Image 1 (cartoon, protein in one colour):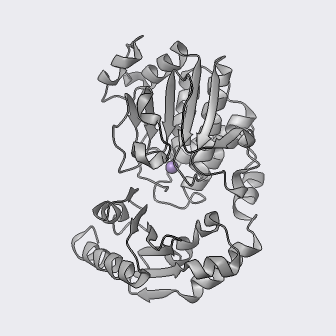
Image 2 (cartoon, rainbow, N blue to C red; image 1 turned 30 degrees about the vertical axis):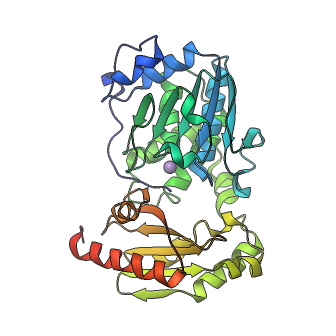
Length: 350
Ligand SMILES: [Mn+2]
């Protein structure tokens, strides 16, 4: 899930002074962004686990890698874990080969840093509960489930928050870090297209490019590295495209997945083709899962809050990008989401 709201970055000078040396008490310092508290947790510990959500996207992968680099630069050790592997388009990011895919977490970690997870469950990693948890997120539906929580809904990406952490730590922004962080900004703004993109976004992008991120190379890796299987899958989805005024939707069945030989990650971004139609305000992509329930990705152009719709159906996300999972069969899930979206158009911001 990606893309957010707009607001200037919070004043770092307003962050809590204290940085409690006992991390167990650190969660007592909201509402300010607990940058100092997080840095104190990093300084106090030696070994950390850095995780993100299952089916990691550009923000998840890029922010994990940059966070790992920051921790290493501080002379500490970081292990990087996700429930699912790194998608092909992000595998050339510096250090991506160090991200391991596991289902259960154990080890002598001083803290677990969870990036981009609006709940502990989103990581889909077992065994996290027993660790000291630091939650860094920017989802509209973010929740304070951890011991230290830094949720900034105004940040365009979690990578932006890691970038602020790097600066606050006085660490060197290396070209490798800049590459990973630029990727988070590029992908979570949909290529500087979503409503969350402001002058501040370009200021960060500027600094990251100055620090060594190559915007052309990164854009080509992300947007011009599609597999033929994904293009066939997209063709299938587009042949199912339907429109009703400001709403558009398309879907992929499990049979389509098998026939095209597409991978799970090939479903990413298909929803944007429906949203790209002139006059369409909200789009839904429905994906029939092997276990026959239906995963929904929603995108909006701003006239309606898709996170509110997703949340009513047990999911979450951002105002312009959200998702949820519904019971099948597909026509049943479609009826349900269309009813919710029609209602949201009537009563929401539209
Ligand atoms: Mn994100």
